Length: 93
Image (cartoon, rainbow, N blue to C red; front, side, top):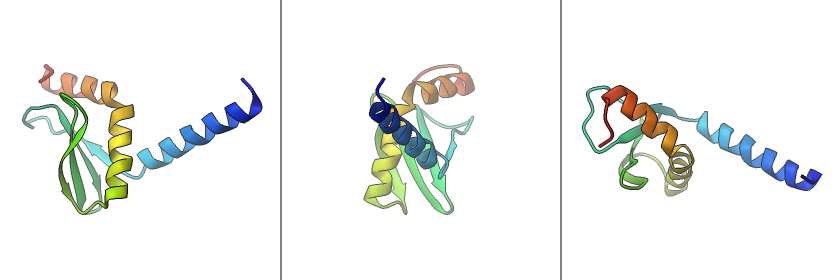
């Protein structure tokens, strides 16, 4: 890989991790289907459905730009988040 490509990939990964660390990502054990997660930052909350596709179900406080970042994160980590949902709820709904 050329140094420029490596630098661009490293920068994208660094931004992704920086964005990820901004939020608490929560799945509640007694929560309802469909599979979803809650992205929280202070008093702001966005509920993001993971099935059948990643989409914003509810938003309380985040800007459109922040929601775009959240959807991108949820999309990138979708399989991981679904695996955690399955572990917690013992099923994929």
